[in-house]
Amino acid sequence: MTSDESITVAALKKRIKRFVDDRDWAKYHNPKDVAVSITIEAAELVEIFQWVKDSEQDKITHDSTKMQKLKDELADVMIYCISLANVLDIDIGQAVLQLQGKHEKVRQAIHRARCNCATTGAGDEIRTRDPLLGK
Image (cartoon, rainbow, N blue to C red):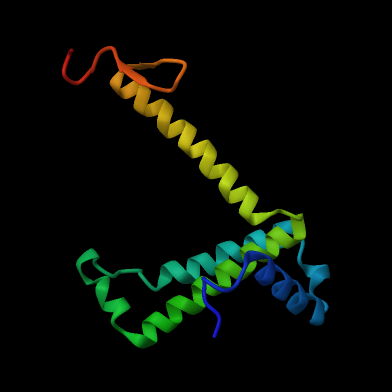
């Protein structure tokens, strides 16, 4: 049995490409239509939680039928996302890490702005004034 620990993104991309090619679906897999399919499948995933109170969400995780439906819909979303990456020749790992790097830079900038910090050239923070404490 495969798991997140043993299967690579590259292997998933290859398997999904083969699935699409075996059915001669590549002609239908243009960026717009695949993106639309992602949205449709994401809506089906969200539908599982529709009208479920926050306090009752754990009932979904304890219901094997609902959990299987959730897994299936999540897999559909992932399959279409990977298919879009195939269509557009996007390296998913590189894209994810690049975006996380951008988010980290923004997070650091927000942190510096919040605490009004300056940095030395060595990356050490020097607190100049905390706007919340007025110091």
